[in-house]
Length: 335
Image (cartoon, rainbow, N blue to C red):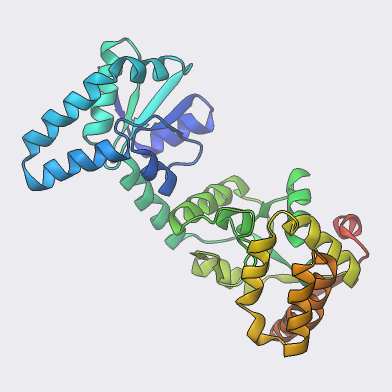
């Protein structure tokens, strides 16, 4: 028979790398939000889930169970094979630790494949994430990285993290760069996914005496930072990276790849076009249409982004501040 497991017990096994976590909800549920590092082996696909759900609401619980059994029976051999191919211990979960995960664990047990079932399912995990973030006390000293658009702040954080420094890549967790062009080439995460990723990174940082992250707005793409992160941003040591215009232009071209996402870039630009002096806006759009992306970026920086950032910088008067004047990302990393 299968064995129920609490979220705390599951996390212990996961931290020891002794278990594979499997989400048996439908593909759309899994895509919307799931436990980090989990696999998806759906008990029902999206259409089947909708059919069973409709029977449950409009006919009866029994009718829904019978139809669910018919659907599951037809694909049971291939379903079991997917689990059998995964080595080591396994834990399954669904929305509330109900029918889908219980049936999966029972069937696997009958086939001599041991699997735990997460008590409370994803709903219990989501509640835990929200509770933890709401009560989180950040004891680490914050170092907040600022810099005009194009100084490669996210790339800098990636480099530092690769060296073992305690880093929070908030844009990476959000799947968004935090500007009107921020989703180009990326897939923005929703709040549930962002919260999960943030909590996991906070746990990894643990008792580190300090943490590095970029100065983000409260809202990053589709997500909102928890209040304690905004407080850390305001109270931490502010590190300002100053870099020449052309170096920033080159960094933006590497990050955003406008030659691949030309139409998205033009569409995003048009949403801010009215905020830029008319002749300059016309020239930026002409450059974008003509594939003169470097020229377009330089104009955007000079006439739109830099003035906005200059205004933001005045809001940090009286707070501990360190400024590094560098020529490129390599020098920024060394500094």
